[in-house]
Length: 286
Image 1 (cartoon, rainbow, N blue to C red):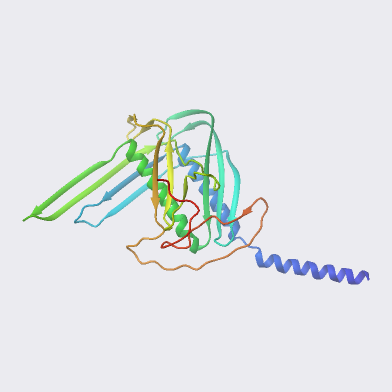
Image 2 (spheres, rainbow, N blue to C red):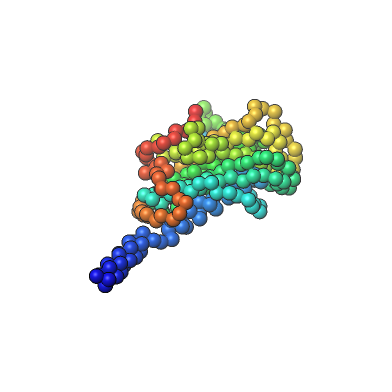
């Protein structure tokens, strides 16, 4: 009888090892690590600030083009992880966290002293090619919001030229440029269950990000002090697309995972299925 129990136990252990080998792997671990890194980047951009440059070409006789560059380099510490959610079907990790602020040197080298200020942020990550387009759209929406915030506060340079021959428009150039450094802008209501969440995807699959700024002081890249006297807090909405309709795209395959590390919540994140038509839990604010 003792031998039977031993054999049964051995069979059970072998069975569990086979089960673990089917679900174990590093894909989820890497997706969660990527989400944490994205959280740190988003908090750095919110606290320290970012430098943004954009150029748009929207004349009627020129090929439309809109390009944004945003960058920041800084040391950040004290980021606290509040929640990690993993979507098994999409292999997408969502990380929610915050940082309590003290003395911070911002993007233009100015030292700012915060007191009892907590900034919340989120991060997204995936190792699956099929799930990257919605996340890329989210990042594009965020840097578009950066540009919208900079152009709202600092302004943008408009260059226009038009020419008509014999009542026919033959040349039309409408270009814009933005170059600024902005700090203190943050995404409100970052939690996935927030009623008025500041980020998400609409029914078409395009991403949106709401950005708010309750500091009335910014500086441009030359260090000039600029005071904004408009409504406070300032609020803008950025948009981003998962596909470029002007370029051919290759369909990606779907990868599934079912790992279960401790302290990870498993649920759907409402990631769009495709760019043409996808259900969404959150619609862009009006």
